[in-house]
View (cartoon, rainbow, N blue to C red):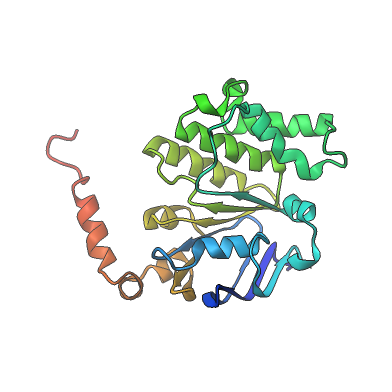
Length: 259
């Protein structure tokens, strides 16, 4: 079976320093692979390489095609990218932002079609942003802004989503909303997600596969249960992650005052 995304021996060197070393994995339809690891492990760099934004050594294949042979519009039809922070300091409306996601599908960049209009409408409704479609980004909260940009990549209708900390700095309700939307989206035929997260609890809940990076190399690749062993996490993070997580969550266990 052909993988949606196949990454083979990808390395990235910037300013004569190797940031990533021989990373390999594949992504199949319906799957969520989460990249985890300490700061500076190379997670965001790997996303940039896969999206074609950074030069790399090795091979990246999107639906069987070498990404180096694809034009930016061709890549955009296959891959949607959502970064940690998106600019909200301008007066585009939510609908304007979402409509930009259809750019790669237009033969004429100034044209509109009923199919594109329908994709925009569906993306706004799916993300719960339809009621805010005429508001400008300046008027939105951080969570609403992130949902507007998520709607943009949904309107783009790619097969693969590359997400870099999509719920970073958002409160719990928006974190839940964002990851619930992503989880529903990836269950469509021919869709898959590659996502950077710092929160190991999110990775454990939503990931089918976890790639643990350490110092630019793959420390482990597999199911959350196999990757998140106590010994492995201690080696990568330099601390007893299990003990720390248990300490954090112990206070949330049921107390005598709970019903």
